[in-house]
Image (cartoon, rainbow, N blue to C red; front, side, top):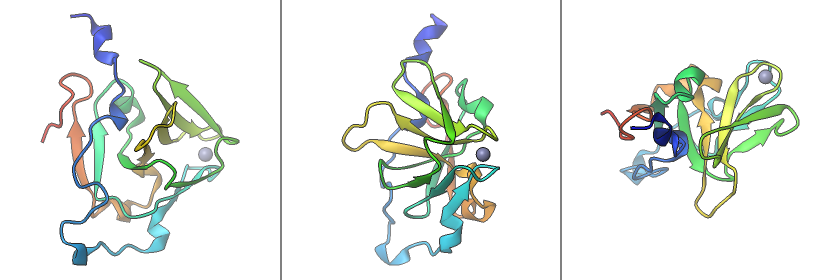
Length: 154
Ligand SMILES: [Zn+2]
């Protein structure tokens, strides 16, 4: 098998999970301090505000994610408030060139990723590592095998 064929798609926006943004029991919404929904890169030049607490995040082992160490949560395109972008950011595009991974130009922290061409129902990936670790406590982390089988490992 040609190794290159495996890099056809970009992992972090691909696997669609069911129930994104919905709680199983509507009365059981997760209470999170507003402050925890605000994150930033290390130097603070790029700031992100989530519309709601993430329930699930993806840790992927593809060639890019394993280097970035990203912990990705997904939101509908346009719902995440992003300040300092694009003026303080740089981007990286690889593989089939459908996605840009965005980082702070100053401190280098990967903050989010987005489709190159916006499409209906498109999503943002947000790197939760830029947020208070207390936000992670209620998040179910799923390991995704983006390097090989393209499936979740749990
Ligand atoms: Zn920074």
